[in-house]
Image 1 (spheres, rainbow, N blue to C red):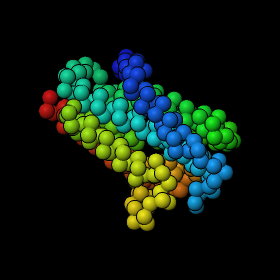
Image 2: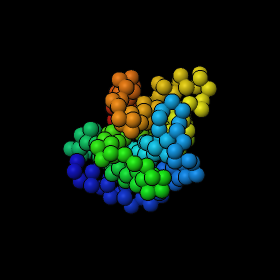
Image 3: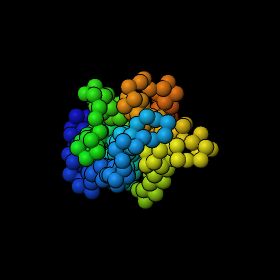
Image 4: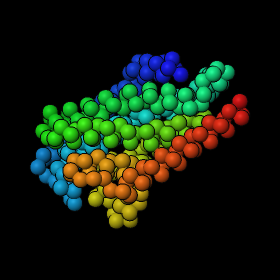
Length: 246
């Protein structure tokens, strides 16, 4: 299993296009959204400035990009190429394969989070206490496991040709409706009510609670926990189903 993890890490770091979209793209999007914003203007109902608010959104978006986009397409292609079938002939357990995929994505997601933080601090003068920076990094990195499980599930759900549009719809839908691209306070009330129950909304809300020096809401933690169980359970079921087909 350790050898497969090393292989996944090497492949992730060598994929320049993937590195751009998962590491550089979120920082560029942060600058596009918050670059010309008044650093003292606050987002309604949050007490946070727009750069501080969007910093968590884009760091979460970067981690989501790394673990969701990377896992789903790669797994679907490996199933079609026969690589997964070959791995099943070894002593590698199914959980080892999933762990290797998650580890490879996590290596890319951490730099994407840190780079957004660095850009926000240097360009938009975002200032937090040391414990807040550490807590934000840990919370966003750990929370990305929810979407890593979703990426594995999508990789086993669709074929290599179909997985990309399905993943893109899921990716942009969760990002936009969950408030990662814009504050949900700009949404109609009915859409705000829906957004509150999405995992991406809860994911970013935990980070913003840290910025506000308060404990995350129980509802947000529960939503992430429930979706993690659903995604991980779905991934496990689809993996076993795919094994029976093989």
